[in-house]
Length: 299
Ligand code: ATP
Image (cartoon, rainbow, N blue to C red):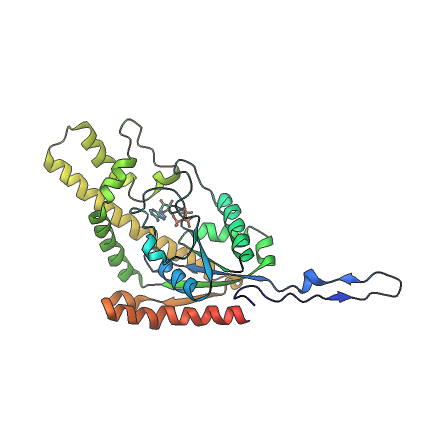
């Protein structure tokens, strides 16, 4: 038997004599299982989803609303091929960046991906920070709870610790080529409009003034440098605001009994370095999550 599919008992109910028997199979059928890895930006959701997927023959469906689009891989912090460790990822970087991929689109695409993954006898793991997408899939989609049993894992990190981590992450993104990536997507002839598709990603609107100044060539070097540093500070600030809002939304979901969220505190991981950080990851996140998913699949 596979990790995620359950044996499906054939049950029939013999009614009164003379009447045909009723096939009760749909009512008794064990539900297929889906795992969710949730958490604010920067907490390690992708890493945990990949860790779990390597152990449980799983495939990952991305639920970060900016990572679904093609492009801006650095800005949106997509997992690299190396980090994926051969685990198939769905809805990651394949949507036209000029389209507006809505929660409804996510519901449809994610549902299809779940079915395909189950067909392959694998476990679907949905991982990403866009809680409105996850909520739409699970709660505004009456069929979902009827069809699937869900295990919700929340990777939590104390906000002050997470804030300094995501700020440093922005510095690493800049070193990795964030400015050039946004520059390639920037159109100085168009109006400053950041309400559609991938243009909503944190990093795009913040860089507008700097890139516009660069394109018109009216500013001196010092002004441009100041605009760049302001843009980077704004990206850091907005990422911290995003983390805070995502956390509030998870807490709201947590307060609903039907969500039965399993919280893992990963703060220790962020307070340690290298080997010690990896050990803390194993102890506080990977091992407990592996146990949770193991029990969920056996249940
Ligand atoms: P909301 O309803 O506020 O959009 P949500 O739960 O649907 O919230 P979030 O993941 O919290 O979605 O994203 C909110 C906003 O944060 C996005 O519209 C985008 O501006 C920014 N954002 C989210 N993820 C990323 C990312 N990976 N890279 C850059 N910006 C992001």
